[in-house]
Image 1 (tube, rainbow, N blue to C red):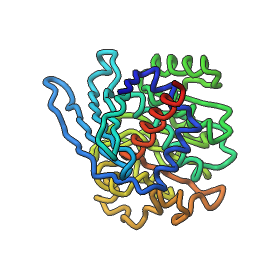
Image 2 (image 1 turned 180 degrees about the vertical axis):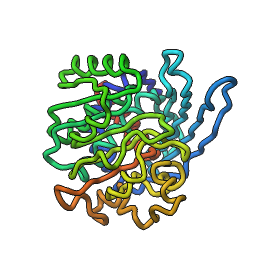
Image 3 (image 1 turned 45 degrees about the horizontal axis):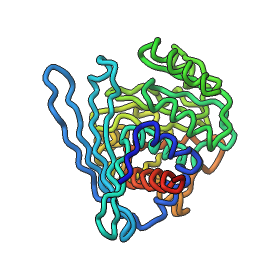
Image 4 (image 1 turned 120 degrees about the vertical axis):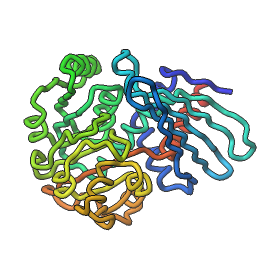
Length: 315
């Protein structure tokens, strides 16, 4: 049985191939039950979350990801997310691989956002702003830079020193990046705004978005969480990774739906429909687009299969 640690998982999931693998999985006959989502009490701090995400390609591969999200880890200097992915044969049930779940999650999340950006952001997008300083920030920069000609990256976080450190890490990777303190000013000039936080209150306001901007929301994965305000949703053409996920977990969509500011029919399409052509993507250069992602098990399965096949082919 193959065991891939964090570094090995990262090496086995190059951006271009991962983005293409996720796109192909959205076109496939993958079976994806609704994921299990459980709150776990942590005495003296915020609740943690346990996620269980199964998916399978009939007769080929099956897998399940277990993920824990502990918001309080930021005060311990630890990642908020830990997890593992178990990949098996869908023909025999034989266990094939155990893959680092945190790295797989971070990379497939960023790759899915980049896949959506391929259909929704302006092809000439050159400036990207990332809100959040966790492990996803660098991944989002690299992934979006794979599909768009990004020349300038900016990063904002509530912790200024963390934003500076993240910018330095990006610079070390060859990305022209700077940390910013004025979030509104940075949003107003950005072609792509990508949020990856655990915020419970809006960070990005719709009045700040310039014509033609693309808003990418990948954090705030609970109904009580939110990274954008009502105006951002109302000014945008809205897309989601999956309707089932966005309508049950994504606060950026669920809250305006609950208040009556938007209807389910206001969601123009989900990612599978964009890929198949059943839903139109960006229709003009001035349109503001919004993509809300809460994660889908087929994305993990696509990444796990790619990591397994890339690694075994190298041996």
